[in-house]
Length: 139
View 1 (cartoon, rainbow, N blue to C red):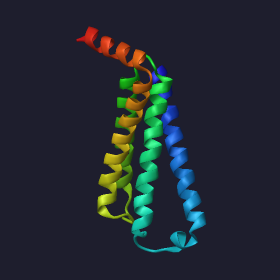
View 2 (cartoon, rainbow, N blue to C red):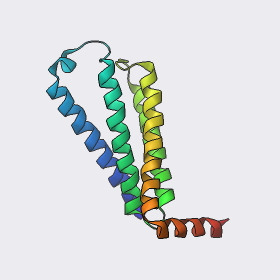
View 3 (tube, rainbow, N blue to C red):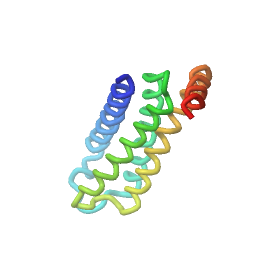
View 4 (cartoon, helix red, strand yellow):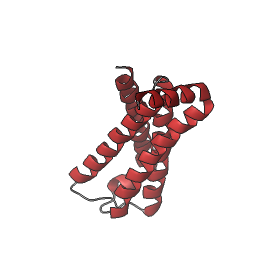
């Protein structure tokens, strides 16, 4: 149950941070809101960068909130993130983003969740060692 709430909380943090940042950028650059077609490349690249940063934050938080099973929690969050990115891009009918954006976002977000969890483990080697020994015992 702890993993469920850790994943849910971390995903909500990622979602709120990305949504708020997108809203701030849209408000700061009004031409983006009124633009038809594809957004400028600088916007797409900056969106990828801050999405990756927030995914890293989510990976770090999920490991922090589930210290007994950080790798499992990070894996679940990475799967949830990848699934929602894929589903969102499949459901998007207006195709306002470049084709490569979806693939890069999928790769960047999933890798960043993993790296955030690994960063937490690097700072807490005792928990990482416990996770390793728990994995060995179950095999």
